[in-house]
Length: 345
Image 1: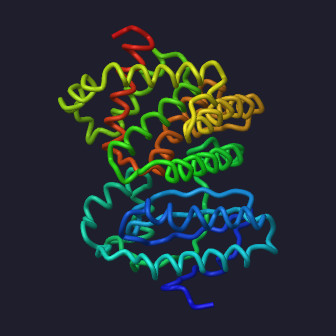
Image 2 (image 1 turned 90 degrees about the vertical axis):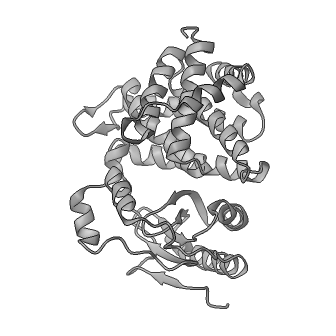
Image 3 (image 1 turned 60 degrees about the vertical axis):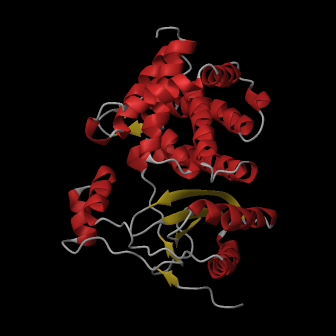
């Protein structure tokens, strides 16, 4: 086997204690191409060979644009098979379709630190980077990494299994979407994202008034420094009526009825998962498995609200929507839930 390009490894990468192999692919180009032409066929092959039982991915910017791919092996004896298949697939793709863009281009150190501090602390920045700033990893390379689950964010150790199950379905749904739709077209990407958001929100927060309120809070989180909504949002919303109202109403009705399969395409299976997810969150909360900092064990309703924002964001991340896109799509959904479904506009 030809040696893959620029493979770097952390000490003893192998398999983490819970059976996950994590690889970061540094690719300063369109990650959707990497997903559709490399990761999707690789994961499909590994499932056909019955050597993995789960996977998920995250688009990320830390130390350069990259994709974080996590795969759960059937058992430790299959770890080398998974690693070999992964290195073959990534090596072939990076030789055939290398990213030509300079990974340092647009890598603003001030902005990067600001983004870092949205998710981590000053102490963590100092521990990792000190005063030297964040380095940029070599382009067209990949590295095995540790996999540290953000338990505090998702309800503590008891939430890990639930969230990994959801992330698997979220990733699989987006891979399905990439195979069906031309996600390089911005309007197609945004249209897909708003429908995925509507299905998930309708399942977890079925009352339209509550859903509109949640979307208002969620959108505000993504507007830079609490800025007001741009005037263009209202113009765009007005231009979509009544097609937007009709489509979101159809999604909401299908999800709330518990029978969303008729939605078709990639959206149908995603909406079915969203219905199952609501039940799974309820079961976990009833068992006392979901424990959040400063709140302890929480009710099903509270757990749903605490998790929904992260679930929306991570699915949009997989689709390729930016934070600015999320602010815009949240505005569309807020007004649709309030004015069309709840009739309060």
